[in-house]
Amino acid sequence: MHPLRAPIDTGVMVLGRKPVLSRADVLSAQVHRHLKDEILAGHIAPGERLIESRLAEQLQTSRSPVREALRMLQMEQLVLADNGAVRVFEPSYRDFAEIYETYISRYGSHMGRAPT
Image (spheres, rainbow, N blue to C red):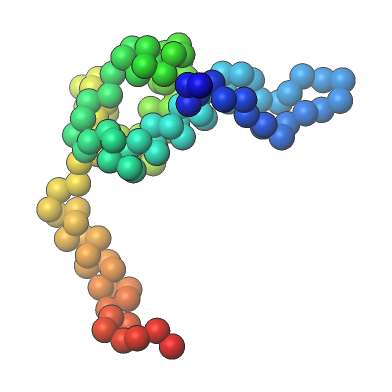
């Protein structure tokens, strides 16, 4: 079964009325979760270009949920849009240095000590 075709339980059901979430909302959340997992696992490489139409075809869905998922990933800064091209964030040496400096300033006094 395709990863986006598994039934999901949104937990949103009101007696006598339609669910609050639309199918498109649920599908874009599934696409977002799938793409995020792929990026974090390294299956989609840093700097790799993400093309809506190609992703929609691979995930067997329309472009709308893919577009919304890419917007969510952009808000999380996992992808960057540049001149219409969407690419996976590729950290620079400076990014790593800033992360390291933040880590050292926060946890530096605890480094080298065994947990108590």
